[in-house]
Image 1 (cartoon, protein in one colour):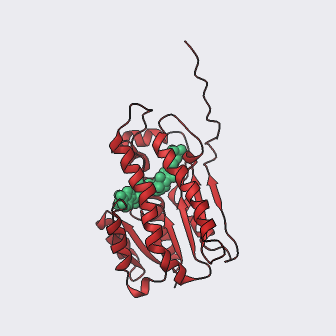
Image 2 (cartoon, protein in one colour; image 1 turned 180 degrees about the vertical axis):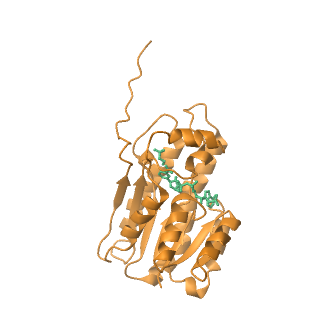
Image 3 (cartoon, protein in one colour; image 1 turned 135 degrees about the horizontal axis):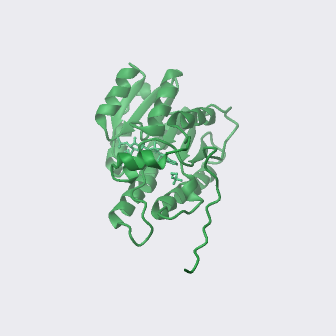
Length: 250
Ligand code: NDP
Ligand code: 8X3
């Protein structure tokens, strides 16, 4: 049975992807900080899900979780590098360095820790192995308050292409999956737990749902081994890419 290693499996895109792959007979290494959610996922799919608590901002915890993988959850056929967050949506300078540092530590450094720790197990899987890095349209399109969050996702875009280049000629495919507005716990986290702001953000819009993203990860990971989808950018139909603003003198 192929194995997928999912970062951020306790919520949103990661939880939906873990469920879809488990339903389709893959084994899943489900990671995140919230142990009770990992355990619930494992209970939902007995024998198919290995719950591995880790904090992406802590290199040692990522390495320890990978080192402790049971033999029947190796090698890894797909790494879904998805765990991440935005904190705050104020324009500069009304921003907080601690938020910026956590986004950099999670979205950039955490993704690098997971990539490097899992890479030998992907190599062991051989043909058909893949890495799916979750970027964002925010990495390409600036918007007020996007600042460092968008910059971390620009890093993910560029790193995906560089990783693919460095791994070129081997068996491991690399894809940057770059969604726009999607409904998960993302905005609740971004607003420091404001559930009302979360609901308001999605009012009158049919956003991307985590299940839609899971379908895309499935599509990417199950391409024939000679096919590499480099980037997949996706928005809900209601979101348009016209984001330039004119700042007029009053
Ligand atoms: P959610 O908030 O629903 O899920 C985020 C996941 O990341 C959780 O499982 C969380 O697990 C995990 N995570 C966050 N920090 C850490 C950490 N330090 N260590 C380990 N795991 C961590 O959001 P989404 O599902 O929407 O987000 C998934 C990815 O998609 C993110 O990278 C996000 O930037 C990106 N994205 C989201 C979009 C959206 O509009 N929703 C659009 C484009 C990209 P736990 O808290 O248990 O640790
Ligand atoms: C999240 C998408 O457009 O809200 O990455 O920044 S957006």
